[in-house]
Image (cartoon, rainbow, N blue to C red):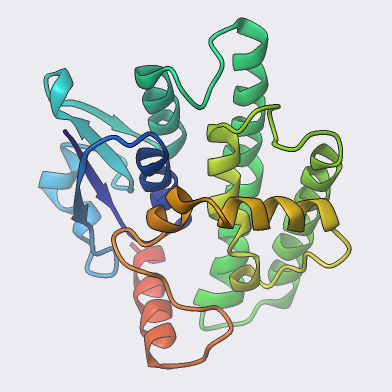
Length: 227
């Protein structure tokens, strides 16, 4: 059994989607980011950086893994799935995983902060991160014109990217004129494990709706980025 400490964010979904794809049994522990539960001493003992997700593998002597990319690699290597074992195949997956960790995630994350969460609308910052996110989408478009999946076969690299790219509307970034990216998004969304994974621990609000649930989500996110 694996304990998953998570919240409804792209990084959190990476872990839950992977667990669903791999059919690994897991128990969900929702972490309320708005209330700062990720900074509680009990959580910091799991991840000293105070961020989700975290997994604790009870079958391996309560082995703890934090950082979403590290969790994906651990789960893939634990099961022998979603990442090749040969050096070149593994390297290809790792290259695209690192591209997400160092590019797509940080740029879209900052776009979210300035476009959605900061009460002040600093237009140069909004444009900077939205434009860079779009540029990175164009890199994915080029790659997906060469390959059905990012690293050849379906892998943790696809999971890592999808959990972020699927939220492009929330970041205010367009995917117009990117047919291969749209094809890939549709293929990912059609996977039952992906659908189950993004409902953990709760379904996030629709970016196109301006209702009470969305506003409450924004307020919790605003509080969490200030911690």
